Image (tube, rainbow, N blue to C red; front, side, top):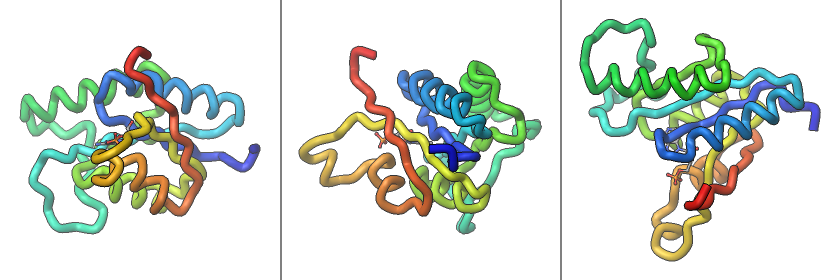
Length: 148
Ligand code: AMP
């Protein structure tokens, strides 16, 4: 498993982000790979562009909601020592943006969390499932349990 040189962890600002980034970091350390983190802001009206809009982290827009998201994102990235150049806070649809960024940045492995949805949720699909079925690189799912 030594061909993974660039790993991308996707976080959704849930209580499980720490587990996902720590597992990704652990793997990156073992493989001597570069680790990046992406969060997709999916509740903001989207301009119609193929890659969405990348929020510059030095952006001084002053929007308190956006500032909160940036702070939260940076806290998670800081907790595992992600280099500023490997932090991506992007507006768009999570599945699409994760897959597009992985292609653009030549990511070898995407790490996502999975709750192992059943029943209706499985029929409706999920970000994890969408990434697994549509990404062109390998995808590792970190199994998330409610009591973690
Ligand atoms: P879900 O399929 O929505 O339950 O989410 C499962 C996993 O997909 C999360 O643990 C994250 O790894 C990833 N994910 C979901 N939403 C986002 C998002 N907005 N930005 C980045 N990753 C996400």
